[in-house]
Length: 136
Image (cartoon, rainbow, N blue to C red; front, top):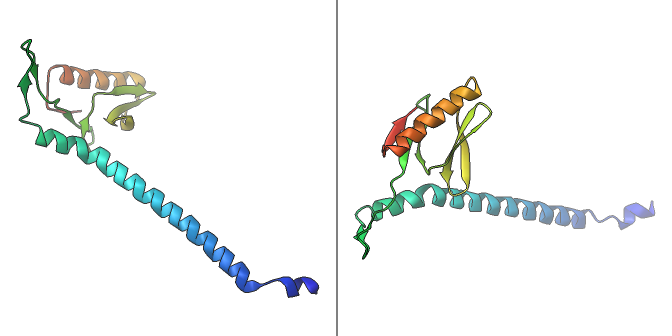
């Protein structure tokens, strides 16, 4: 019976409330930070590209410097159009594409590895030929 006298329900509720508030605050901060980073990674390169699209100069040795153009890639099911940063890789039966600095995503899944490699080669050839957009 002496234990129940020492138990302070209000103190326990205050501690629990403070713990829940801290956890929620940390989750919200992390979620906001991830959203802001994602938005910047998605929009900053395109914004810079648009603002620098006419930015061109010639070095003293005659080399012409132009901003890099990223190819737009349309998925096989026509559900996604992305700016391709240049990285392509096959993982099993999946074609993975680089969508940002250090960011990769599965872009299409094929029946077998050979089909995924064939798709990678098609995209590579389009990039090598200077295409501004390509549809798988």
